[in-house]
Length: 286
Image (tube, rainbow, N blue to C red; front, side):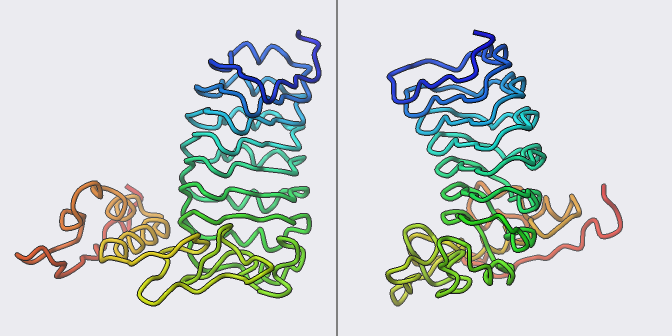
């Protein structure tokens, strides 16, 4: 099997895990294992498949992180891992795959921020990370991409600003930006749509009275509580702080009741009375 170049086994009833021995198939150019019943983690040895051009393993039960070693597969054009149970951050190593055209990893449990390196990839035309647990802003680099066509971020914790140059790119999402501007990229606060961006028939719909959205690109509206508002504030403050002590203040100790969060003080009725903004770590990285 070490000389096999194409392995197409999608839409079968395979169970079990993907063996680490897959790394021995160093001539492999296409690995297609979509819509099976496979589970477990993706082995780090997948990084030995340096001839690989097409990786499709969507619609399975794979969990754990996307191996950083996948960045060694510098001939990859397509990475399609959507609808799994993958978690952790998107490896920075993937931004070094200059041949990459498609990154389709929606419907997982990925966290962290979106690297500006993806917007700098010269051939990346399809970038879909929707319906994960990513947070932060949209990197400016996507606005200068000449290859980008499909750009999907809905269903994450994304907040403003949206790069103006991205809103003006009339090639994005089937030309939706021609009609809807920035909404063709991602729905603004207080609006929603199923995919998280405007659709041709009605754009992004406004939320009903008394309801709104917490983040850009929402697929539904909610009635926001004090804790929801604090969650947004703490997420933004954590993402914008480069000092470890300050970032930790906003990120840590948030598993309990909101009155136990760092900097929050409540009165005897359990209502928030004040929020502290510490000046920690301004002169030190430690």
